[in-house]
Image 1 (cartoon, rainbow, N blue to C red):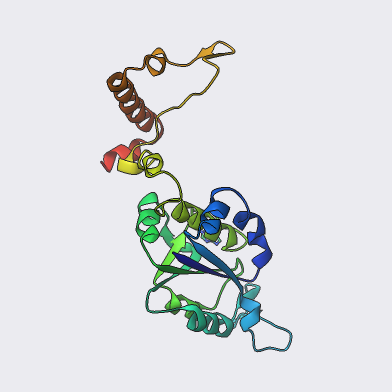
Image 2: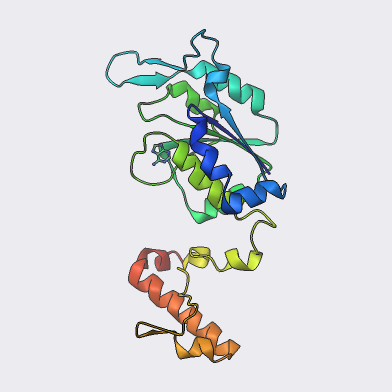
Length: 222
Ligand code: ADE
């Protein structure tokens, strides 16, 4: 898969791309992620990409031309263009799954003070990562990229994401490691029993119990 991200703050992505599972996926050639500075597409001699909004009010507004030029340059017939905005569709694991099957994603990071409304026409999909406002779409684009990349075949063991929280609208069951007794908190006996059927049953029950307690709304969707 290829992911192109359009931003006015490219340096924000340095740490994200150079650590952990994302870095490994890039090094293995399972995903290609390219960060594009929208300023590189500005025709202005000062590389200006925003201006005052017509009608007054809000601060600086991202101009359409550099972003249209960038998308024209990067987009192919296989691309899905996503715009990060708090007004977008609420992001869920199901969307991450669907997007992980795409060949090419072009992600446009919005800007907290706003972007020209015409930029919306470029997007196949608008995504919000939650009902709160970030200073820009950069962190949001990293959130969705992270959740998509880990689902690409070969990035992590498939078994590991089949058991993720939210699969089947259930939260994940609890897991433990050494020591067996930590400050009086003990690992449940069943996990030490080696009895696979019982372990499976325990995990299913815990998953259900947890979801009932913490996210009853998910159970209604099952
Ligand atoms: N940009 C600013 N806030 C955002 C949010 N909650 N989701 C996606 N993009 C954003």
